[in-house]
Image 1 (cartoon, rainbow, N blue to C red):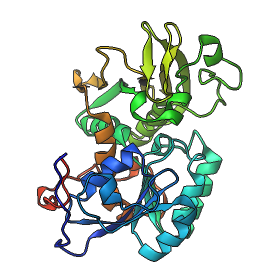
Image 2: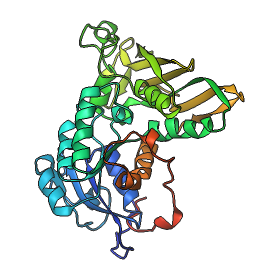
Image 3: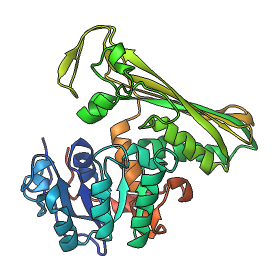
Image 4: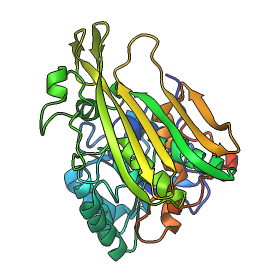
Length: 364
């Protein structure tokens, strides 16, 4: 690995950023952020390994960056000491999963951008907990924003295309991703390694579908986001879940075992939203352990006047774009109103400015 030692000669002021969680996603985010001359990483918080180590050495620098990884139990203390303006929270997927981390940030008056998928639009999937977090962040005069790949590649891009529509009758699309890239917790939530019977088990199986089942799918949340962004009134959103099954024996890195033929490698979810205005929104997600020739994709199409408006991304770098989308929301988080703010209420992303990039800390 070729590395470049970070330098301290960068313009001021810079956005003071904390990384909350230091798994695969935030390690890659750290590599991106240290190449920007408008950002300073002031804290790194993790509940896993590497506590007490310099984060620069962990991501490949020859010499220390000067910021040690702090354990989650010391999060409040380190936030008080380092005073970040924004915390980039990359740990788990639902508002309930990350409640304790959100509370620590809000109580220390730190804005949050999280890639927790539900936080894209959790008002309808977890209304009580979302209202509780909204009130807490509003009380402390900081914002909470959910972003990531679906925010950028699905929602924001489709919203831009929708601006070129005279009339929309139907919006349909979806995405596919490799669950092995996101760790054990997400893989288990997708049913990886289960039998079909276990997948549909009452109360416990990820395939359980009912109006009150929880957690909701990622496309459930994005459908609700689209409705809000397009000024539509949701009549109902329904999900259909089904397992994807191994056609060949394959090893899952996320659960660290071999999946035999016929067992679940993940799941497919189709969420259908009907609106009082007559517009239908259909979102499909396929999250599974990949077999040979499988690859990520993302595609969305708008039907109406004019016709033929849509896009397809073949093999997008989904984990990397998850981070770049969240980075594009960092500065918006500082300027956003206090409380939980869904990105349909924010301007379109405008994150890339070439002059903000330097050779500082680049890792090849």
